[in-house]
Image 1 (cartoon, protein in one colour):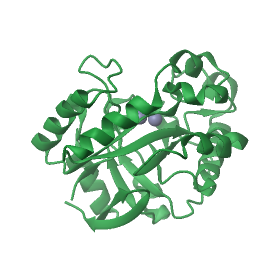
Image 2 (cartoon, protein in one colour; image 1 turned 120 degrees about the horizontal axis):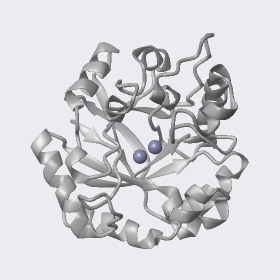
Image 3 (cartoon, protein in one colour; image 1 turned 30 degrees about the vertical axis):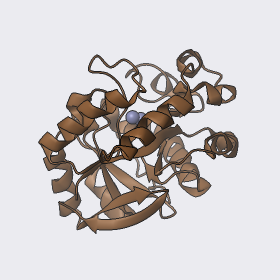
Length: 261
Ligand SMILES: [Zn+2]
Ligand SMILES: [Zn+2]
């Protein structure tokens, strides 16, 4: 079994396309690349139902789409027999995580991704000299990032942690050893997206994966249909090198293991 459990439902020009017809090109690419099952995971801050959670322009400006329409598109694709799952990429929002979870509670998620893109309101992945990098020493970025990741894992509100060592995106590593976060049984994704960022590597590092001993998913973080399953030979190789023989499959937020490959 090969899953791609991280992608954003867009058209080939990367415009938001929360419609069932937009699912088909993703499924076609998946079939071509030997991916058995897809999970759509749009960013939570695109949906106006979550508006009360955001105070930065980055999220507020994007917060204009209808969550019901997105859910309906993926649910209808499932009903038509396409090999897709309903997910969402949920940001760490600190002490408001329960409030965000309550907004999401009515919908039939198969799994929820947990992501830390900011610490203390400062962006990690926007630009190498901006956001968190303009304000904090590198080691402090990593400490706060892993702290936020541990909070997400402990919240019970997410099933998989996305791009688990995102702060390496621009190639900056901690100088002193920073302790890996406790994962509380939450899965880690192996994301090939980092290969196409300045760091040029998969997320997470092999050492993190080996230390975590967590269940895994595979992820492209595709924002266009063409990138589904991209570089998955590298992801499978990393998983196998860390001793993994199974991959996690989700259904209604319940996890099971299937043979990897
Ligand atoms: Zn992300
Ligand atoms: Zn994403």
